[in-house]
Image 1: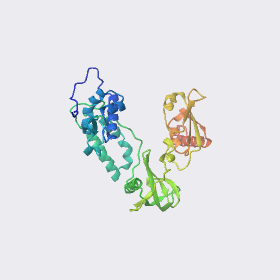
Image 2 (image 1 turned 135 degrees about the vertical axis):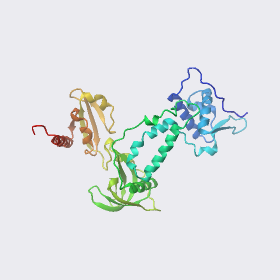
Image 3 (image 1 turned 90 degrees about the vertical axis):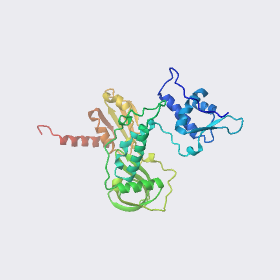
Length: 354
């Protein structure tokens, strides 16, 4: 006899409602069904979810609403299996309001793209996510957020100040498509010394950091991988019909200097900072670089913070934001740079007697 979806039942007294534990189980069940185009039995699904078969049967109506399931008997006498209908498998993208709200909160990160066709594409996705978040349902689903909560206005991320590129949006679109499709470009751009060069560029990656956009790629004129900000490009033209191979050993992480931006060199500058005790909790839970070490300071009961970077220039403003509660112990070049910057700031605000 063909198994049918169990009839809807009222939740038993004491059964948890709206918990993320239930939502995680449903996510794992969805994933198991998506990865089993040939079907999966209730027993197998219960084993993967580490729950009872009775619990799996209780989840089936919710899974059916999201995935359009069907049951079938592979061979007469074998256990019946459940699967996503073949007509739906290729387009089934499972997403809950929780996912939509998380993605919508990232909108401020894409502010530097404003004015480009890429920004329009991102905004189109955001509109669809908002529709999902606001789509009414007849009844709630465990672990879900209500459709009328307007949570998209209350779950936000405050991104750092961002750059605007009114004269570079066409370059951004071409560089994005070239990096995505591994298409070389004919580029006119300024090198690190401000000299304008023309060369074929193999754009490997597009990076948004601290509100700015940078391109990592192989500049054939130099025969080396370079990192150039978007504003360094004067013009870009994709070489249609051509492609380049992405090196197997290329990793964007190799060019990321932690919180301090991008770098073309290997980090070799050991930065050591003592923070006052008033900053202890903040610093202990702050992550700025994969190499960081946090210990007990020998002065005043604070904390000592140490990491290795390639570029000290981006470290200076980070240190200055802590004011007098931070003291740089090394390297000497960083101590001198912070002192010089602090003196320049003081010179802007002379005292009454000056």
